[in-house]
Length: 585
Image 1 (cartoon, rainbow, N blue to C red):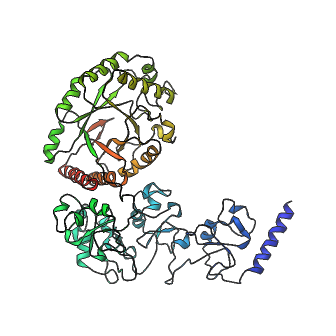
Image 2 (tube, rainbow, N blue to C red):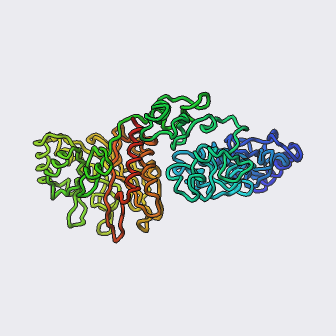
Image 3 (cartoon, one colour):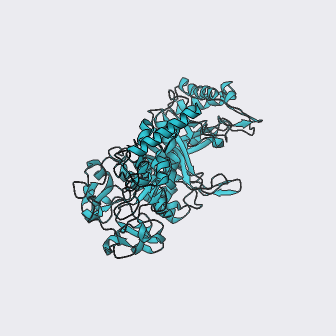
């Protein structure tokens, strides 16, 4: 059998050699193109259907796998198949698609082929991660595609990166690398200041990158792409909305009072009109098929947990009303109804986080099922019924964790101590008591954005059904560099998006942000807060409420500085809140 395989392989090799055009096949006319149009591999003809397929490595002669062909890097301009079509452009620079990558809209950043798309919102959640799929990270690494596989930078005499710069989201403005990022909030406070790091100043100076080092502007005369800045507009921070130049700035608080008015200067209005910049002058949208288009208009309410500090005091600091809800925590053994009344009297709707905690660390789900807490539950349900006002109860929260005695991953005496079946029974028993009493309360089901113990079980496994609940809430904190297990700082989007996508497929109930905040360790907290509000508005259209945990907390000797501890952070929160309202109105 082995001899027959060797003979067959040799025959194929001979046939391939005789049938191929000697020395070159620029268009892969004698080979087979890879089935993925973005992959420039040209397989040998004998590969047949195995070209780029799962079984591509099974062939005995030559290479039928796109990755192997690309790694060999033999151009079809001077080689027979297997080879790579159009490895280099007319200037001798390797093309992104020719080396198996995906080119970003900026025309220079080459992402991994696994990313699907290169750059844009959610790039860090794609296959390849932030280093392989996000243009800012790839530009920061600054690896040339001429000498590296993706992720890399496609070289050209006119690219910002080839000048040692950072390209802004408008794809025109090129900042010096020292800025860290180009344009956006806080650009004037970065190394180099406004003249070097702010898009508006760079565009005003109008120095061409063809003859100047950054800061400079890219030459757009050779492309048909209509960038916001080249058609007389001002690009908003969402990277998609293009306001009229008369507005001065695009979007944000007071946009309706600027020259041009709401229709020219307010992001929500421009998104609602859905006019493409491809065929229209500002106000317009760079892309009318973005995820934010037509789905952001809704009411998003904001809540707060602030310990014993009055939410009114915070609103006085902001000079405006902010909160619709106040989150409070009470133990099952200390349910004091007057605290619910106090929240109502202050003008807010209570969200009660009812916790089954005690001095004992024993698991509690079976205790709930067995009726150990029935007296406390019936008494409180009766008080709710008598009071007659509707508020929210969240109980058995973050149940996919290992840190509470009701968690499915909670371990006690060396073994996992709770089950999903117990969780369903316990939750439904609690809700059933309140419903039996006719209490006008609503219940939330709260899940943590990630499982405890670094468990990778899909969130769908932890789904108890939504028959008796009124909203699903997701908890997502950025514990940046605050514990040995959190030696990273992620955006709200990166923390929230996987859980949001999973829950969205499981329920049609409203989705809320149960609790969120960030520490300041290794993090620009002010920028994080602003981007969180913006992401809620534009990236997660089913979110209708978010509660901020604004209370500093000591945990195992480490201060978790969740609160707004500086004037800059308070201003960032105010700015973010106003932009949230403007974007969703």
